Every structure is written in structure tokens, then in C-alpha cells.
Length: 92
Image (cartoon, rainbow, N blue to C red; front, side, top):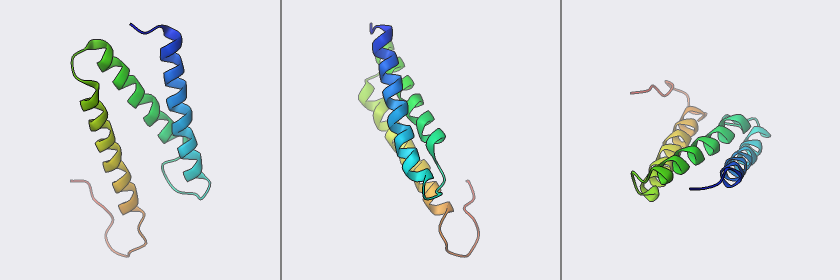
């Protein structure tokens, strides 16, 4: 079992790195900024730590699913913000 300081350090590091990526998107005025990417980092860390402590699944599978989900979110943001005239992206 991990101690509390190790877990807190992982949460803080993930949130700060996510917020750093968000800051680089906030400066030019793009969507998905500091708050969103900070929470994505925090939530991803929470899920990976929880699964690895429970021993229910291999953490590599969980990380793969998280990366896939973030990729789908990023694709939706890119498609929504295109300058092409026409109908907006509609969820399925």
C-alpha cells in the first residue's frame, strides 16, 4: 500500500502537468484550458491508483483506455472548432 504523501505527490504532479498543458491552450484562446486538463490529469491519476491498489485489473489496460478516451475528446474539440461552414458536430 502506498503512503499518503506518495499519493498526494502523484495527484499534485498530474494536476500541475495537466494545468500546464491547459495554460498553453488558454493563452491563444482555445477551448479545453487549465481547469479541464488539470481535472483530466487528476481524474486519470485517481483511476490508475485505485485500480492498481485494488488489483482487479492490470493498470496498463486502464491507462490504454484513458489515453483512448482523451484522444476521442481531443478529436471532438478539433472537429467542433473547424472554420468550415456547415452543420455543427452532433453527438450520436
